[in-house]
Length: 185
Image 1 (cartoon, helix red, strand yellow):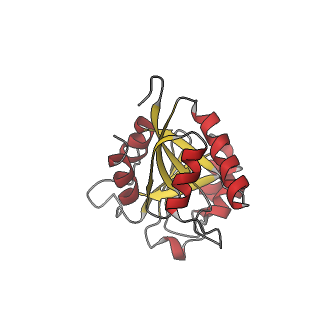
Image 2: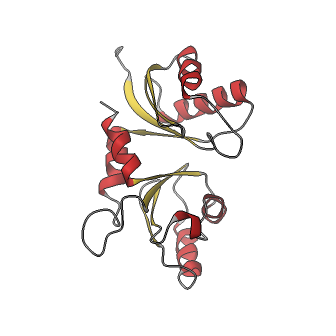
Image 3: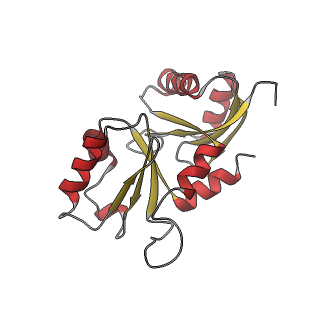
């Protein structure tokens, strides 16, 4: 890795959903052509491990620009360090073992574009309390969510969460996050 480069995880929203199809080999090539180094795509859902010397905000802007210019649609990019990915696993209060914890497939960390207002989060929790069994907690630019009965039956869709928290987000379950963390070496 060149001096000053750091390893990051880029989580790209809207990739290979809703008609926004991108072959991962093509995405890798596009990012390398844009100057990113050591690019590795993981699964086909917009997970990219890469090296760069810019700060995360600069990387996010560059990634969003590449996606828009090359593929013609808007994607949100959430860029995190290895330490932040580790924290999204370790600090998720619903991840772990025992009856108070959920399944690694149902427990998600939703990476957010900014820290939501506490009042917006508290109102979301209060409004949802009587509607479903999901459990929510807030971290540092991450929403922890245990879907309990599954994402497909929940009222807490990504669009709903973004509207209520007034920021963009992209979710990964614990199985995916552990796999992504292992690729960041």
